[in-house]
Amino acid sequence: MAAAELSSDTPLAPVARAVSARSQLAVQRLITQSFRRLGWGVADQAVSSLTNFAVSIYVVHSLGAAQFGAFSLAYVTYGFALNASRGLSTDPLMVRFSAVPVRAWRRGVRRATGTAFTVGLATGIATLAAVTLLGGTAGAAFLGLGLTLPLLMLQDSWRFSFFAAGRGGHAFLNDSIWGATLLPALVLLRMTGHANVFWFTFAWGATAGIAAVAGILQAGVLPRPTYTWDWLTKHRDLGTRYLLEGTLSSAVMQVRGYGTALILGLAAVGYVQASVTLVGPMTILSLGMGLVTLPEAARILRRSPRQFPVFCWLVSAGLSLAGLAWGIVLLVGVPRGIGHAVLGSADVWRPTYPLVLPQTIYVVGGGIAAGAGTGLHAMGAARRSLRVAIIGALIAAGCSILGAVLWGTEGTIYGLAVGVWVGAAINWFEFRKAWQEAKRARAGTHKQPSAPADSAQGEP
Image 1 (cartoon, rainbow, N blue to C red):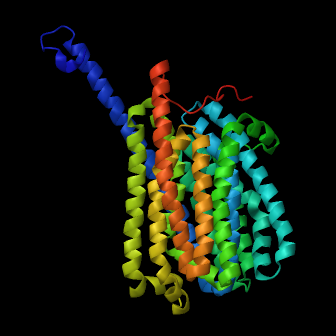
Image 2 (cartoon, rainbow, N blue to C red; image 1 turned 120 degrees about the vertical axis):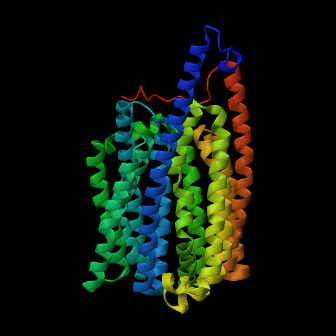
Image 3 (cartoon, rainbow, N blue to C red; image 1 turned 45 degrees about the vertical axis):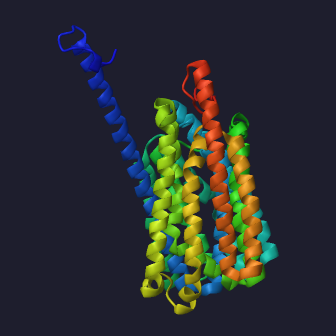
């Protein structure tokens, strides 16, 4: 019986009021904790965004369009390895080890970070093998990347591990360590006459290694690469699909990057990457907020499932509106000084400016899709999210190449935008279906919908 239904002289009224007060305090506590975690997520993402933003600006100013294009190809390849690592290691960790006891979290992190290191080692070997085929400027960038990919993957895995435990401050500190060591290293290279794409790429990865070692000390957990197969086997229902999903997304970027280089030249790749630099803070925010939104969605799904769809809608609304606002700032500000301040020479920012509008459309579409994607992952609906990724990747890859052939550099980005908007519509369709299934299952079993059962307790 609700407190409102009891008269003031009813003996049970004080009890009902006490229960109501405790419930309100619990809700307030949950909201406060959620905002605190989201705050750390925004702060961590700001550090990551600003670091990558600053590095891109420094590289384009120091190396010029051609070497910046080579660095961009290496960065796209890094994104491919990163998505593969996340799909196999930290995505299952976020779904199944968020808000679990500390001992279970440590067991999961030990295996997940070890798996991330192993993925980095495998992709690093493949990248080094590609150096013999590439040669020249691109080969130098890939050499620096291949030597450091294991460290880059391990550093990224610590961010996800900390957010899974609700320790956003640790992730913020770890990314700050990387930024604080990377920027002076790049300046030192320039001062000592080593300002070339190999040394810049190598320094970028090596300083990530410093942060990776710091992550071990922060967590008090030593990664176990020897448990990679054990982790992959236990989480193959999620890991395999998340691997395909992540690599498909990166494959589209690689197809666009390599296709643009072949069709339009390496300088065009540099202009595209310069436009990515301009929208970089929002792009990285949209892609990286999964650090916060996925574990938060998993917590809400377990504790307050009725609020779960609202949370997913708010994620999309916030990211898409932020992307739109940033795009408007760039459209107005780039010709009025932002372009020169960020990209330097007019030979770079003037050809880049026409790309701002399609990049904004692309970022807004990604924001709209983000909430549904977060929801699908939190529910463990890996089959549905993979279906979305396949359809969106095929459309985006085909349209980006067709756009490059027919309309040049602008066309390749418009093609990607078409793919992401179609993907957003499919994402929300699949989310609605998955949520209906979850509600029916909950009604039938009188249990809250949750991620697929995993052994947070059964990890050896």
